[in-house]
Amino acid sequence: MKKIALLLIISVFAVEMVSAQRGEVRRANRNLNRGNLEEALQHIRNAIQDESTKSDAETHILHAQILMEIAGSEEPQHANLVDDPLVLAFESMKKADELDEDNRNLLDIQQTNLILSEFFFNAGAIKYNENSFADASKYFLYSYKVSETFGSTDTATLYNAGLAAEIAGDLDRALDIYMQVVQMDYDQPFLYSSLANIFLARENEEEASKWISKGRERYPDNLEMIFAEANIYLTTGNIPEARRILQIAIERDPDNPNLHYAFAVNYDQMSRDTLFSKEEREFAYEEAIKAYQEAIELKPDYFDAIYNLGALYFNEGIKLFVEAENQLRKDMDFRAYEKKEAKIKEIWLQAQPYLEEAFDMIDADDENFEVVLRSLRELYMRTGQEEKLEETNEIWKEKFGSPDDEDF
Image 1: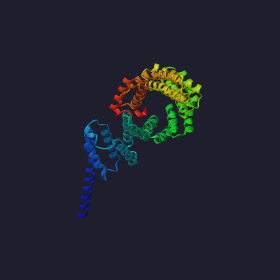
Image 2 (image 1 turned 90 degrees about the horizontal axis):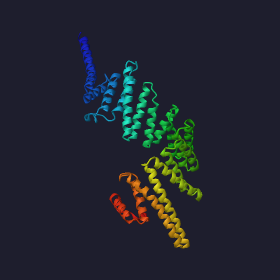
Image 3 (image 1 turned 30 degrees about the vertical axis):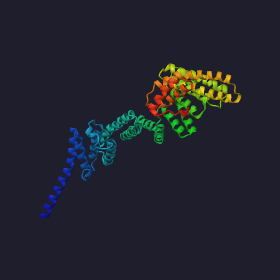
Image 4 (image 1 turned 180 degrees about the vertical axis):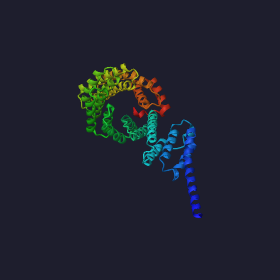
C-alpha cells in the first residue's frame, strides 16, 4: 500500500508540473491579448525552454504571434525586446509545422503564416522606401518563402526581392532570384533589362545581349525594352546601332524627354570618338545639341540634359583651344590664332547659361556640386570673368578649402 501511495503522489506531482508549464502558455496568451508584450514574451520563452511544452506546435505558433505583435508595435518600449522579431517568428513557424505531424494545428499554422507573409512584405516595402535595399530584399524574400507554405506562388514579391538586391548592389543575389523568376514566366519587361545590366556589370556582353534580345522578342513594342537595348549598344560602343534603336523609340514616343536625352548622349559620345571621321564627329556634335535642347524643352528642369549641354559646349571649346595652341606652335601665325581664340570664347559663352543653371539647381550636398562648380570656375577663368571667378572661388573655399589652381 505504501508503494501505491508513493506512485500516486509522484503522478499527481507530475501532472501539476505539466499544468504549471502549460500555465506559462496560458499566461503568455493572456498577456498578448492585453497588449503586455514584454510579459507575454517572457512567459512564452519559459514555455519553449521546458521539456513538457516545447514539443507542442501551439507553443511555437503563439511565440510567432507574440513576435509579430512586437514587430508591428509602435510603442518605444517594445523596440528592443528582440532583434529581428519577424525572422524569429519565421523560425518558430517552421518549428510549429515540423511538430504538427497529425495536422491538428494546420489551420492555425496557415492563418498565422498568411499574416506573417503580409508582415514581411510590409517590412520590405518600408525598408525599400527608406532606401535600405538590402533589408528590403531580405524581407521580400522571406515574404515569398512564407507564402509558399500555404500554397501560394507570389512571383511579384520574389521579383521585388531581386530588384531590391540589384539596387543594393548584391548582383549575385539578384541574379539568383531573377533566374527563379524567369522560370516562373513572370510578365515583367524590366526583368530582362535587369538581367542584361547584371551581365554587363560582369563584362559579359554576349549574355547581356542575349537577355535583351529575349526581352525585345517578348515585348517588341515596349519602349523601356527599346531603351534598354539602346543602352546596351551605348555601353558596348555600338553607337550606330544605338542610334537606330533610339530613333525607333523617339518615333513612337516623341514627347518622352528621356529618349531625346539618350539620343543626345549617343551623339555626344560619337562626337568625341576618334574612330569616326571628322565630318561624322561634327555632325554628331550638332545632333547632340539639338537632342539635348529637345529634352530640355520637354522637361525644363532636366538637370542631366542641362549640365551635359553646357559641358558639351565647354569641351568643344577646349578641343578647339588645344588644336589652336598646337597650330600656333607650328606656324606662329598669331593673327589666325586670335581669330580662333574669339570663336572659342563664343563657344565657351554658349556653355555658360547651361552650367550656371545646372549649378543653381543643386545644393552644396549634391554629388554633382563639385564637378559643376569646377566647370564654372574654369569657364570664368578662360573667358576672363574675374568677378564671377572670385565668387566661385569663395564658394569653393567655403566648401573644399583653398582653390587648386593647378587643375587649370
